Length: 114
View 1 (cartoon, one colour):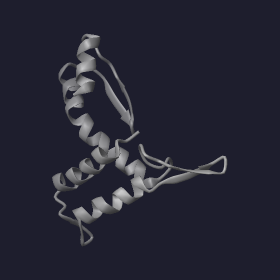
View 2 (view 1 turned 180 degrees about the horizontal axis):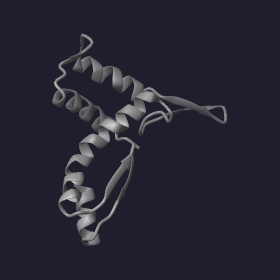
View 3 (view 1 turned 180 degrees about the vertical axis):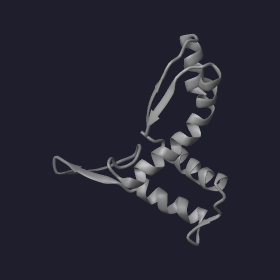
């Protein structure tokens, strides 16, 4: 699940890196506020009770899918570079990753914690 605030930070970073200061005339701070509404104001009904979603985004939402891809853009840059240098395999589909690793389990845990 996407950590909501980190995902919003990465969204703004992604737009900056790709040269955006506005998107169709909308400033990035407004984009961030609108994105936070989409992420943070999700509710669902289960057993006649209303629950507010506090982690991630709505499943099946095109915005959540796009945000997951942008989130992974940030995370995978360094990892894919390292995997390429060592001749390891790295593959991704949306937010699922498959990779090979021939170093120690402790090294992998440290990498993932970073």
